[in-house]
Image 1 (spheres, rainbow, N blue to C red):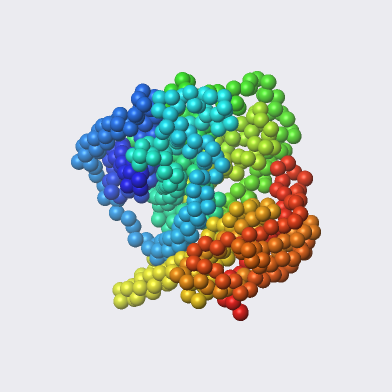
Image 2: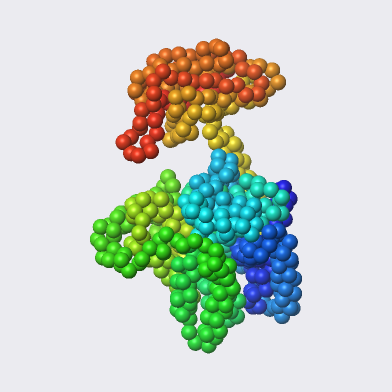
Length: 631
């Protein structure tokens, strides 16, 4: 199963990398730009193979074989074309050594942040392996339509009972997942999680590679550090939504256009920019808006000799990538509820001041909250922008920034014109729209920095005998820091765990069973609210029973009595109210494996607020501790 998924995704990645390398400028050796070609290849490869699988599904009930045949043919064509171009390639692409120590320092911090981001993404996946709501209710469900429905998936999409799952949404992500399932022979949940996490990883890789290529590696790592330091990005990388893939293609198009100003042979880069914009449209409906902006904004990418040829390549790449979404929208997809409603009657909403105030208020709120930071990075980013020099941006670099700004304006107009409840739509989607643009905004911020003077401070000559000593100390310090980070992360609680400890050499874990609303926490406390009848699961990793104690605090909504039992034995019973009550279960003898402690209460739950859908809360278990008996 796992090998099948790796084969499917790896083969798609190979096809994309060959295709990107085949159109890469001859003045740059492919080996010197692998940090750009490989992440671009992943996205382009999945865009191509998802389209081939989609079209194979349209014509065949067994789409794997025809789609693999198309993919093999494309790989052979790309490889042969790449071989001819490699023989004519010039240039060395030697990286400079200026500012090597600054690069090492920032790269070390970047690597340690990447460790934390990977752990966060893996834990978020472990907590919701089927994805968050849109992940399983839209993207993975549509993948199952393609995988199980065969040629009949059109009927599933157009079924009135499925209207709630947005059957008009583009299919790059679902088709990529369904294709990998075909290689696996089953709808394994980890496949969609793997695709989601890899899109997050290549987004970081492309950002670092692009800023490094246009400015220097130190700034590239700094830009990647800002993105990895955005907790919402790390968590969303495993949420199995389409926002991270869409953000990747927006970034890819902006990067390709910006790179087009650094080489005379930029037609291939403009082809990639158009292909990435078309792939964005094949990823999510917002990508259609971005593709339109790139098509119109293409006229701003330059002038003079070769300009017309570059624009033709931009449109050619976009047209090829748009073929699957155009076919899907014209012949298969039901209408979109936002676009289908008459726009003429909604034009007056543009002049509605109340709508502008509501959107601006939500923007002010979510601009500082969407990243889920403890400390918002904007001030530090602005300080670096003001403290650094001012590099002279090329027309293409300004164009890439302009495309991002126009996309943001487009999102604003969509909110103004939406026929849905505006407050609901802002609350349910604005943070994810900002996340789609965040990698590209960091990219533009990175290329607006000029830190040559700062880098020069780290280029002071060091006598050769000291170089190895300094490098050894640097590596030792970073290995030690990485060890401490990993150890600290390993000591943290896993999903739905409330406590863990070591008793007589046995690892003991206490977690939530049925009947809880899930774990909640702040800086100092961890708790879970019960629905009324709930189970605490205590796992003992030892071959013989252990004796221990469980300490905790409790509080409730309304006065009530709470009872905890283990089998027929009552462990704790007492009244609780709004205030905290300290409690302890002592002398518990627990058997190897899973032990279930049942909690119950004699009073019904109380709504936590007057809002619709508010939870009915009974009592909460706070700050559970596992300690040896007698301590």
